[in-house]
Length: 232
Length: 232
Image (cartoon, rainbow over the protein chains, first blue to last red):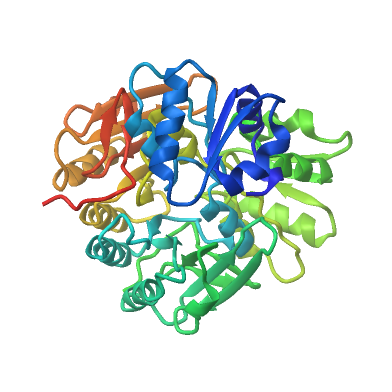
């Protein structure tokens, strides 16, 4: 994410680390913060288990390890596989951060003023039937929905299916926000509705925010009221 | 929240402000960051509409206004009532932050490794039937559930009702984390299960995180795996 959304606590932990483990593109973003002599173990997309295992092994060996992510490492990211791997020998400290959904929502207005769901559309590790069932539950609950991993070159139909399932429960004029590269170079904010949103605008660097039945656009901003009246 | 979870962007906006509007206890936490001469409009709990209106009026009058909150102002907080009030005359910038659910989850481990729901149990502005319907939807969707405003002196039965509704869909050993004052003085982290959790430990400064059917405790930490198998 953006350097000015990085918390002082995260920076302090990076400075303290003797070993930094992370996705190559994220490691590049923090390289200037590291002390000279810090060992860097960078790897590519898809090597999540390998990174988790490497981070834990280094920690067991007694090194101060920082396992990094973009946004919040706890949200669909490396904290979970690493802590599954870790045992009592390791003293793990989670440093929370600004997850992509929060950065995107701040750009759209205030879509998260009331109850909301984070839902990943990636069927790489989760069967599509499970995702579908969750979309249906989010629709029935009239939650604002934040879609992570909404679309990629290989996964091109899931977003359309999700939007259609939500549209069956919400008015066509329900606001939908698409934010690409929130707070990063190439940032783009697009406001549409369930009836007009074009999935082709969405890629793997995007977060899609679908309003609840109560969400509306006020002066060009997406707002979900704090007070709530259930719609019919 | 904690000073070291405050982003540089938030600090810069506070320094730029000519007028700061906020809840009295939050204003006190940032008073040392303000330039001399900054006007401060602090008010108490319950005066949300008044604060929103004051912030917008000051901005319309041409002043640089910072409307502050704890955590992320967009999540159940002041961004929504303020943007409902604002019109095109105002140039509004949302600064995202670390919301309480993320701070609490980092202390518990990695409960947010997969899909999750933010749900407020406050029936002050939302009818209980709506909240109940959402709890049921979250249960059916097998989402990890973050409960905001879980309990106060005046609202003492809602949390029990929510936990019972979730327990009807999840095993009794499902992990439940209670975090009071995440990253603030008086911080307390408590790990229990749906069968054993004691609502009396929970107050209005707490966030309650209820695991999905897949969440488990590994070496004392609450972890929701990235990969997902639907239970039964």
